[in-house]
Image (tube, rainbow, N blue to C red; front, top):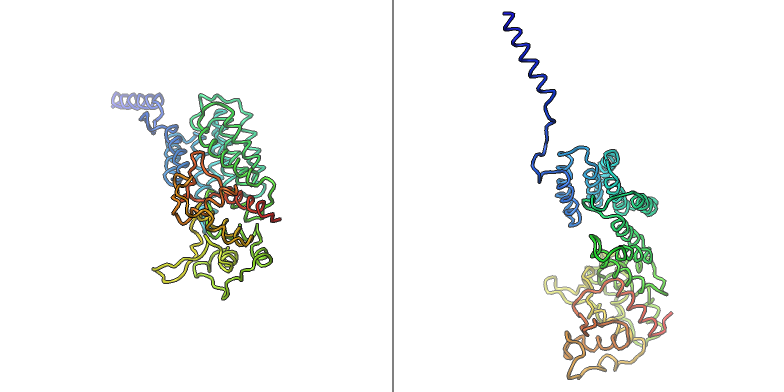
Length: 399
């Protein structure tokens, strides 16, 4: 019995000794199933707007290594971006609380300067998304902290500093309406090197902000105009607001043109819930061509289509009509008809918008491409709309 007991003790001791020397269990043994891989995949999904899929990737990264800081930072960013889309304040609060906890974990587990940089970049993006309190100052502080770090570019998995910091600083300035600073930040990315991770996005953003800066130069816009100026497209309702607010259309027409406004106060039913209902109604009253209601067979009613983007050919007709109304030169609306050939390779001289296109391009209110193309069916962006209004005011000496 004693020898058997000794044998059991020996075997138990051996098992305990073996357990003490055993290697820690690896949760994700496959080379492709690593926290780094899932973090990068999650960040790429974030850029695509796939927030749920991105969050899942960050959770997998944290499962593989609970002390991997960037995964927590990515999860926090995903939670904030999701919270932006949640209408219910209670659910939104839960998402934001989760984000705050994950950011604490991200900082606690930032082992390297590169991990800390990822934390600060996530902070910049979260502040920009939430826009709470002195959010722009918070973005600037996070950017300063990121670029002060002694980082090794070769060790970055997703971000590149200082290019990434400059790029997201530019995005923040753009959101804040600081267009000159935004353009400068995007320019810093482009000047950093001939080609980098953020070069393509910064180049596109720089061109956009440069256009906005030029559009706003020497022009004071109201709140609606400032918001519209940075948009990639302008709806019919927003274009109405821009024309009415910046040109004071109602007062301008009432005092300078002989034509009488349309009687009856007709307002299409699809404008009833639009925040720019009154502005659109003003254009309808004065029968501004290009933004007039049209008959819809399905509803058997005339609709304004307030959320539909304005096309370049429509803006050309609007500008021409305002010029005709204010100058009283009715012949201007047909001055270019009868041409055998068009200077625009994408517009025939028989097109309904040909005369308007000629009117606005010869008056330098709208531009063509270097190839001569007018792009009549392309949507109008905010900066282009503002530049056209400014050119119209200058052409007609409207103060």
